[in-house]
Length: 142
Image (cartoon, rainbow, N blue to C red):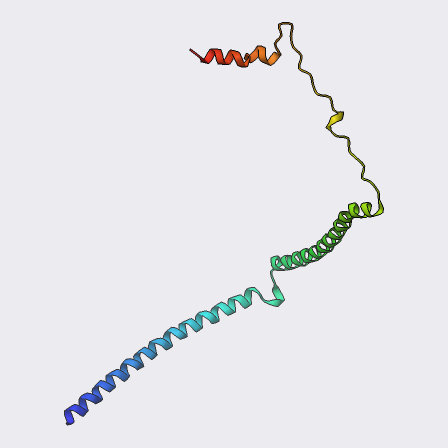
């Protein structure tokens, strides 16, 4: 009976030592991570210190502010352009409502068709250079 109690206590003690060893390793790794975070924080504070902000960041901030202002102006211009286009879209409807007829544009009827000049042998320049359709069929047939 005493041997069982001693063995059981020994197993419990070994388990507790294992848990303690794992906790010790965990605390070491957490300590290393905390040290790295503190180091990164101090470097970031040193680089981005509000008293000595790098000039590039300041230029970026002023450029971004300018872009935001220009974007706002462009949005206003776009809104006015959309309103103008809507008004232009209503013009034909208003013209019909007022009874104004639309001006007719001259169609293609007013344009003259180019005439193809035939030479004295009865062929156009194209037919003379490349042959007629009948000539090409005669050449392809055996």
